Image (cartoon, rainbow, N blue to C red; front, side, top):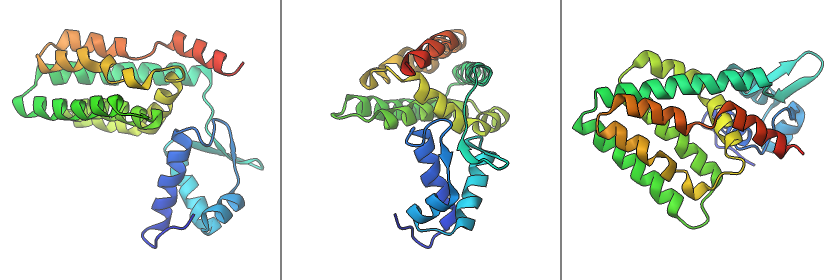
Length: 218
């Protein structure tokens, strides 16, 4: 694959990030600098800098004498990510519902219509659906008006997306948007308590996730 001259490192980061998040590079998979350098036709220095950026995002790790690997999630890691997602997304939903305005309502509805259209399209791609799932919650966080919450959410964004991919192992992609309908309606109707409750219920429970992962690894 060839890249343009525009910020080779940034392009390498975006390419590798997408491959990791989508599962092309699996959890725990070894990433060899020389192989990536040859495949992407980039210098090893550029690849190393890209991997360092991804390490800061929590997507890869480097171990002495063992090289780079895609991050693996222990049960404790998944437990923590699950609870962070519940805390951030439910709080954002409550805050937005409490301070909903006509402008924010229209932005949320417009994006949700795109989400629904995607899920109703032919040959819907699970990876794209997962991206829209996260973008919907990102939008709710942004529209909540809390810059602090947005910064904290963005700091774990890519791990949250990996989490979403993992929870969608046996998920019907066409039902993804439908599962958010009540949440969007509660926010638009200005019902904070209900919006927070529905945001929590929308997230696959930690127990269910563990069962799914065990089944997928048999």
